[in-house]
Length: 229
Image (cartoon, rainbow, N blue to C red; front, side, top):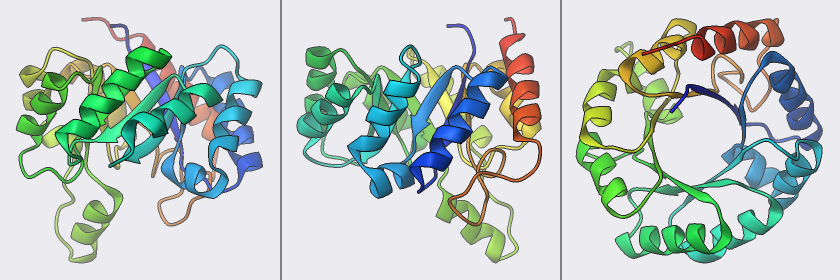
């Protein structure tokens, strides 16, 4: 698939999220993500608001579903989400149910391998259970825990090639990517580039990053969209 740039709106204020989404769309971002903090703070209203303001843009609802998978996917799909997220650590039956909901309501399912002891096997399991995409994810707390101890932070790029080679569905790498790493993702075979903390979102609070966000996003979009195999 062609390279796609997605912004993770990990914010807790809906107005700020909408303003940040407007900046992202002007810069050339392809997909908007209603991040987990935004869903916790604003719920389904956030998805409805994003769909109202951006009627033709794919919207990912980062539910991080662990249970009640069919019902959660149904709620988000009816609010306007085009993609929903389930955790690989959920029970296999939950993953099967959200895949069923995806078929019933016309949404794609993204499976997240955050916290899996074997990230590669986890990705393969998500594919085998019917997910449409794999999110290869090194979490915020995990990264910051290493940093606090003065140790090297793990990066999703560490095993990205192995994950990509293990599955036949599209993969996105998530977790503390630098500018250079984000732009490099398609060269690893991961065409879905996700921009969150620290590039688009502040690394210490659920707030939009300071500085020239639009210029940064435009640069990344231009580089990623220009990538060719």
